[in-house]
Length: 137
Image 1: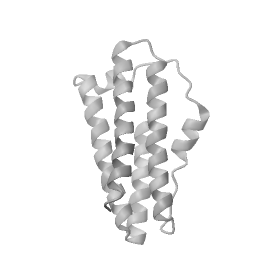
Image 2 (image 1 turned 45 degrees about the horizontal axis):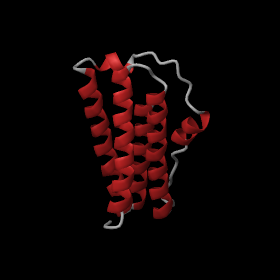
Image 3 (image 1 turned 120 degrees about the vertical axis):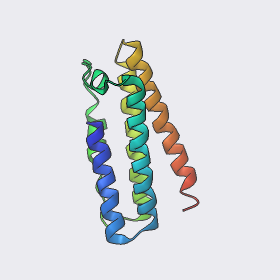
């Protein structure tokens, strides 16, 4: 689900970048690719070579419907303003952080709690870094 959400956002940013030629969209698309790499590295770190061990772990967890809707609500066009594009990307990362936080709280497995807590912190860091870096773009 999270991979699909990352892919949707990256594809949306790529389309906006191609259609508008926006430097902000290009920067955000590059940032998104880097974030996907960080996510993969975190997954690899906790999976000890067996990615399926974490990805196939069963959690009895029903995410807040609004979180899932916000992850699915990543839609932009070449006419999307830079401010709206930035807000959309920040909302995406904030929502992922909330999802990871609720997943960490919803499991009793210490390894998964640590994994989701680390991802939650990563999303908070990303949001802060993007807000700061956007000033320079």
